[in-house]
Image (cartoon, rainbow, N blue to C red; front, side, top):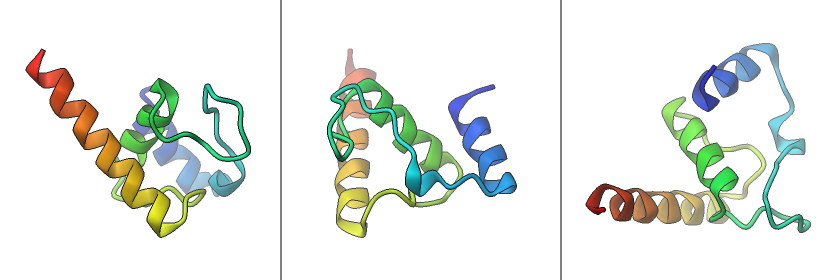
Length: 76
């Protein structure tokens, strides 16, 4: 399954995503820019849902970082 499919299934099953994250930095909050944070942001975006773990401000920041990184990747 893709990350987006996992998020979709989890949403249907009522997974408490607000209690989960797997940031490589290992801090109290996700960094929003490591590989796993970017994949999580993408998965929620593909499901047209804001990541419930993140505040509105964090979500906007995560999406901005994701879009910037995606553009950089597409250019290379």
